[in-house]
Amino acid sequence: MKLQQLRYIVEVARRGMNVSEAAEALYTSQPGVSKQIKLLEDELGVTIFERSGKRFTGVTEPGRAIIASAERILLEAENLKRLGRDFSGGDTGTLTVAATHTQARYALPPAVKEFVAQHPGVQLILHQGTPAQIADWVEKGDADIGIATEALDNHPGLVTLPVRQWSHCIIAPAGHPILQQSPVSLHELARWPLITYDAAFTGRSGINRAFERQGLAPQVVLTALDADVIKTYVILGLGLGIISALAFDPERDAGLEARSAEHLFESNTTRLALRRGVFLRRYEYDFITRFAPHLDRRAVERVLQGGGEAYQL
Image 1 (cartoon, rainbow, N blue to C red):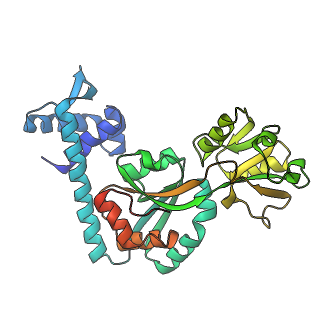
Image 2: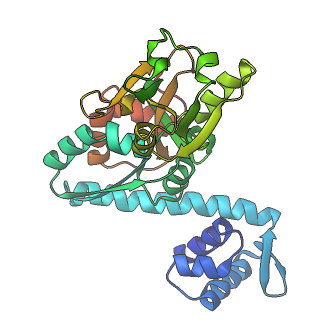
Image 3: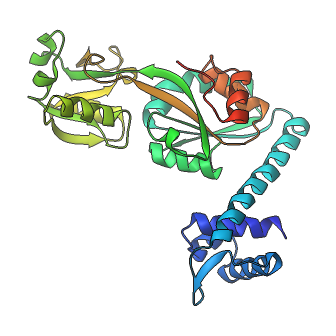
């Protein structure tokens, strides 16, 4: 039995039985993957994948248990490498952080600036994506840390920690009539065209629920993946914007004014996600603490070891 064979069965399962995609992801050939899987099945004496001709069509019952065990073995093998690098490599390596646009643009810069100055030997890589993409990247090991509001706590392969709570605000061009409302009501807001986040992003589900509870149908004329796009079209007069309050700066966003929407929409929690069971290097703990000072190493370790929530905001 070889670790490479375990990588093959795990990747094929992740790719929905598509051996070609798995081979491409693993930088090998499709026949090579198929051959090694057959050798592993012969060694174990069980069939891991159901077949129709030469095609894999599903995972057998023993195959599910074997793949789960293989995932644990591969994670521990990776942990051994990470542990060795942590003690022998010193403060060098790579840290990949995946975040939504709002987090990458407005929340992360101070922590990134401090981290890069403190750890010049660590290559910091930032990926932007949807919450679903971020969860997938962390779960597969393509990112070390994930930061988002939606979706992260719905993946069994992840453990998550709360970072901070935030609320929405309403933005409008200076002089817009709604700015005279204090406070702004949902009924008044529903009278105007609205521009807000895509359905997969930044508390959009909470916005929808607020209108639904009042029996209102908002006029959403445009959705976007980030607050900067929303602000652009609000300035053009296409509608009022609903964005994270974190993303509005009166000095930077000239021509726009904001009103709090915390009384209209439920608050949201930014969460930090890690792969369950992973060994974190010292500089990874340092990055987490710089981004979320309440999450010290002890708090993070409690979550990683027990899988429970270590800290309530």
